[in-house]
Image 1 (cartoon, rainbow, N blue to C red):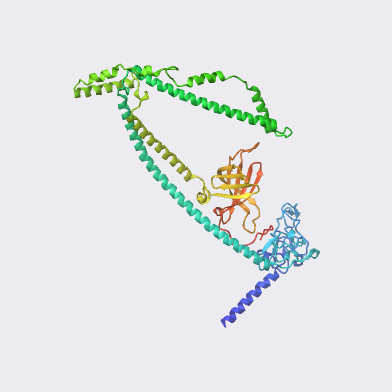
Image 2 (cartoon, rainbow, N blue to C red):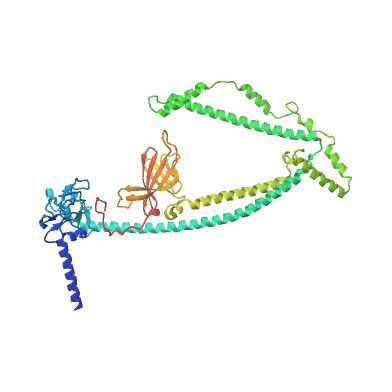
Length: 565
C-alpha cells in the first residue's frame, strides 16, 4: 500500500514539474519563470508600469523597454545600455533608460548542461551547438535551417572530456600538495640551518678573537728579538742580501709586465684586422645605422693612430731584464762574501761570559727596551724586514684562517636569511621548484625555463645559450584565451606571472626580458613562446604549482560566448 502511495506521489510531482515546464514561454530560464506565471496579462520586468497581453509575449515585436516580452525571439536585440532614452509611462520625467532584463535565450539542453545564448544568435540560420545543443535557438527554421537535438551525443562527449579534466585536475592538485609539503620542509631546513649557522658564528668569533690575541702576543715578542743573519756577516752583508732579493723581485715583475704588454699588443692587432676586414667586406648598400656608426668610429680610430718606433725601448727593457753576473749588472758576490765578525756576534760573545741569571735579566731588559724603541719609531720593525719568524707566520696563518671561516659563515647566514624572506609565490610553493629547469623546442630554438632563476634561448643548429632574462618578481595578468581539449592553455581570468628581466642585450635593442604566464596543468610544461615586441617574450607554461580547487564540471555553464566543449 505504501509503495502504491509513493508511486502516486512521484507521478503527481512529475506531472506538476512537466506542467510548469510547459507553462514557461520559449527562451525563459527557470529563475525568471515567476514573471511569466500570470494568465491574465504580462508586466514588463524592468518597467512594471507597462502591462501587456499574454499574446504579446514572443510575438516578434519588442514592446517592453527591457526586452522582457521577447525571451524567445531576436526582436529586442537592438536594445543595449547605450540605447537612447525611451518614453516610459509612469516614469517621473516620462522617459527612462532601462537595462536589458534577461541574460539571453535559455536553452534547456536536456542530456547536457542548460545555458543562455545571446538573443542575436536566435533564428540567425546557424546551429550554435556549442551553447545550444538542442537546436531550440533555431526554432523558426529561417532559410530552411533545421537544427536537430544533439545534446545526447554532445553531452556524452563533454562528460567524457570533463571526466579526463577532473582526473587531471585531481592529479595536479595532489602534485601541488606535494610541492607545498616539500616547500615547507625546505623552509624548516633553512630555519634550522640559520640557527646552526648563528651558533657556529658565535664559536668562530670567540676562536678568531683568541687567535688574534695570540698573534699579537707572538708578534710583539718576536719584534723584540735582534735580527741576525743566517751566516756570518756585517750589517752591509745583510743589507746586500736584502737588496739582491728586492732587485730580483722587481726584475720578475718587469718581465711579467712586458709579457702582458706583448700579449695585449697582439690582441689589439687581431681586433684591428677584424675591423679592417669588416669595413672592406661590408655591404655599403645595407642601410643599418649601427653598422655605419661602427665603421665611422673605426675610421676615426685608425686615422688617429701614430706609428712610432718602440724597438729602442724594447732593447732597454731587455737589457734591464737580464740577470746580474760578474760582468753584467751588480756583482752581489763581492758584497755577500764579507768574512769579518759582525757587531751583533760580538755582543752575543760578550753575553756568553755572564752568569745565567744575569744574562736572562739583561736579555729581557734589552727585549723590552727594543720593543719600546720599535713602537716609538726609533728602530726598524722586524715585522717589515722580510724575514718574519715561523712563529709569527704560523700565528698569523691561524688567525687569518679563522677570520676567513668566520666571514664565509656570515655570508652564508646572509644568503640563508635572504632566501627565507624571498617571495616564492603562494604558499611558498615555488621554493620546492627552485633550480629545476623545463625545456621545449619551438621553431629554430630550444627554450629553457629554470624556476626562480632564468630563461634562455639556444639555436637548435648549435651555439651557446642566449639569456632571455633573470628572475625579478611575481606579478599578475588578466588573460582571455582558449583552453584546448587536452587542457593546455592559459584560459580566462587573472593568472600569476613570473617576470624575468635584464637578459642578454639585443643588437640595436633593449635587454631581453620574458613574461612567463602560468596556468594549471598536471606537470611542468612550456606550451608556447612568442616574441611580442623586439626582445620582449611571452612564455605560456603549465604547472601544478598554480592549480586551485575549481567548481565541479556539472556546474552551470557560462551564458555568453561560444566556449569549447
